[in-house]
Image (tube, rainbow, N blue to C red):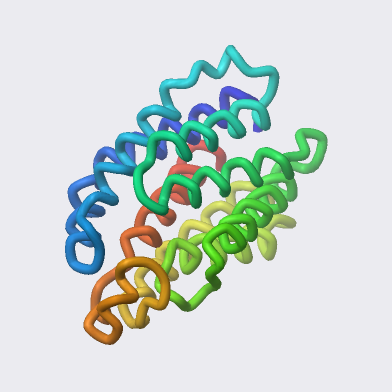
Length: 203
């Protein structure tokens, strides 16, 4: 993945966040404060506005994208998505096999997000999409980047869907307890879109 590829990933993610902003807002309205769609749309649009040519490599670009997300996405999502990209960038190895490099960097990003949010899988958060996607990437890396990303997208989407049956223990949704069951976590939904964007442009 070079700088152009990294920019294409962010740009596709921005397009998907914009396309699904209303859906993300509706999900958030049920269990949160109704701003996730607007926040993700605004933040990724800002990150997509970065010029790939201004950066020496993909890692530098993604680091700046992460910092942009921290500063432009409101609520808890900004620091979490920002941390994902900052850790991804730090772990990126341009000299490694593409599939292995993406898998390792994605794992670092997902783990960093878990640390930042003091959360884990099964608590109805974005991690329920990111961590299954990370495992799929690692497990399928030997098959090449395309198959690995396809598996990651499927895992992320299944993980996001599974949050409908969970009782949230983090964030505003946790205040609802059992009443939150039946509602998909908006963070997991947006994280699945991020993985979908990677599959669409990097595979």
